[in-house]
Length: 372
Image (cartoon, rainbow, N blue to C red; front, side):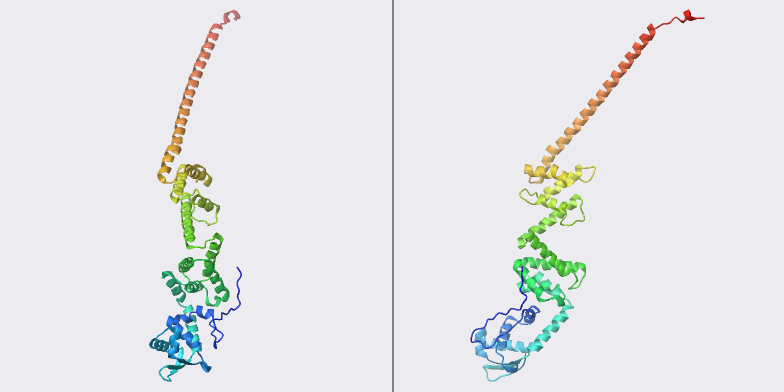
C-alpha cells in the first residue's frame, strides 16, 4: 500500500474569503483541541478567522452569535472561558454589541507543548488507553491516539501516523480497540512504562498476522481467538505444553476443528484421551489418533459424546473382547495340543520302550558256549 507523506492542504474557503486558517494534524493529535469544549472550539475558530494586525480581534457579537448558532449570552460566557484559558489575554468593550481583544496563540501552544512533554513521562498514555478500553464507543481519533501512545514521543512521526491511518481504513474500530487492550495488558505484564521497548513491535506483529490471515472484522477475530483457545486445549490433552502456533502438530489439531466435517472441541478431546488411554506402550502418534478415532467419527457422522461412547462400546470394545476371546481360545487350543503332543510322545516313547524291551527280550546269547 502506497502512502503520500507530503503535506496536503484542504481549502474550505470561498472566493470572497479574506482569511484562511491552517490547522495541522500533528497539533490536533497532540491534544490541542482537547482543552476546549465543542462550543468553545466553534468560537475559537471564529476568532481565528477574524484577526486584524497584531492578532487583534474585533467582532460584532450578534453577527458572530448568528453564524455560530448561539445566543449572545452564551457567546459572552464562552469568550470569558477562552479568556480564562489564556487564549485571549486582553479585552475591551466598545458598546454592547462589539467585542475587542487580542489572541495569544503562542502562549496556548507552548502551554500545550509543555503539558504534552510532561505527560509523556507520566501515566498519560495509560490513561488514554484505559479511557478507550472502558468506553462503550470510540472515535477514530481516540483509537489513533491510543495506538500511537505506545510509541516514545520522538518516534511519533508522520510515517507512523500514516501507518495508523491505514489500519483505521482496513480494520473495524472494535478490532483496533481490542488490539489496544491486548497490547496494554502485555505491557503491564512486562512491568514496563508507557513506552517499553518492543511494545509497538508486538502491536505491529498482531496487525501483520491479521493481514496474513485476512481477519478484517471483529466477528472473524472472535472466531480466530476461539480456534486458538481450542487448539491449545487439544495440544495440552495430547501432552504438548510448550508450542509455536505454526507447528505441524497444531495445524493438524486445527484441521480437526475446521472444514465441512469439523468436530466439536469436546469430541476431539474425547478422541485424544481415548487414544492415549488405549495406547499404553507410549504416546500415540497423531496419525494413530486420526486413523482410529477422528476419521471414523467424521465418516459415521458422530456429533456428540453419547454417540461416541456407544460407538466405542460397540466397535472398539467389542473388537477388543473378540480379540481377548480369540487369544484365550488359541491359548487353550495350544495348551491342549501341547498336552496331546506330550501325551502322544509319552505313548510313543513307551511303545518304543516296549518294542525295545521285546527286541532285547528275544535277543538271547548263550554265552556258555563261548567259555574257554
